[in-house]
Length: 119
Image (cartoon, rainbow, N blue to C red; front, top):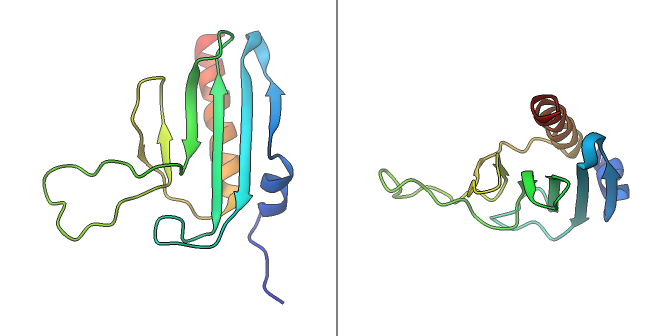
């Protein structure tokens, strides 16, 4: 029997959850398994987002699209799908996905930092 990755059940159980935070901020979590592909080798599609009271995304971890590679030195590089949006207009920077449990830990640590800065 294949061993499930750390935190995967927790991440999947949080699918479609809205978690209310301080100051009117809120977290939305979406996560489900898919067949592994080159873009999603771990077989998990996810979107973990923090929104301000007006509903604007202020932080997001997801793998819904590839992050644009820098123009220089692109030849032969794989487009990364796992990434972080650090603010509302950020197009994303690569996130090194290691496990669903680590994803949750990293996301909620960043949520805490953002809320500490704005509240």
